[in-house]
Length: 270
Image (cartoon, rainbow, N blue to C red; front, side, top):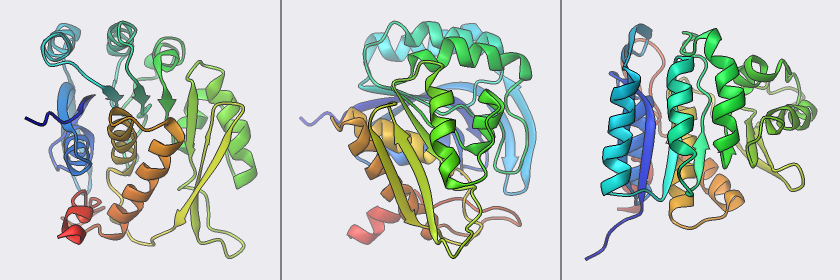
C-alpha cells in the first residue's frame, strides 16, 4: 500500500477557498502529498476582502498539532496566518520539537490589504518563529514589516534577504512579484539564498487579477516538494513553476480578486 508524504499546514481558514488552509490542502493534493491541518483562525472572506476573523485559543492549536504529529507523523510543515504573539510563540515551541523541514510564510496582510498579524506579534515572529524555519517566504510588504527594508528594485532583493536571514531561517525566499515591471521587464523574479548560495527564480508575469492565495500556494508547494525529498533550491524552483501555472490558469470568482487554479496541472496531464 502506497502512503504519500505527509505535510502539515498551520494556518487560518479562508471561507472563500482561495487562500489559507484551503489553498494549502489543494496544493498538497495536487503535488502528490497528504495534507493535514491545524486551524489557527477562522475568517469570513470572499473575493472582495476579509470581513471578519476569529483566532482560535492556543490550547486548540496545540491539541490539533499534537493529535496529528503524535499519531500520523509529518515529513514537512508549512505555517501561515498566526495573528497574535501567543499563537506565534505556541507554534514556535511545537515546531522546535521537530526535525523535519519547516516553511514559514510570515503572513502580515491579505491580498486585499487587510491586516492579519497584530503588531505585538512581530517580535515573536522575528525571535521565535523565524529561527525554526528551513525556508522563510516573505513578500515585499512582509519584508518591510519585519525588517524595515523597502525593496524598490531587483537589486534590493539581496539586502532584503540578508535582513531576513539575520533572524535565523536557514534560507530566505524573497518574493519579488510586487516589483514594478519597469524597463520592459516581463518576469516575476524571486531570490532564494542561504547567505552563500543564490538562486534567482524567474517566470513570466501574468497580467491578471487571479492571484488570491499565491503566497500560501507557493509556501505549501515548497513544503510538499521538501516532504518528497527535494533540496531547498529544487523545491523552490518546482514551486515557482507550479504557482506560475496556477496564476496563468486562475479564474474569476465573485466581483474582486479571483483565486489561482490549484488543479491546473491535473487537468493538463489528463
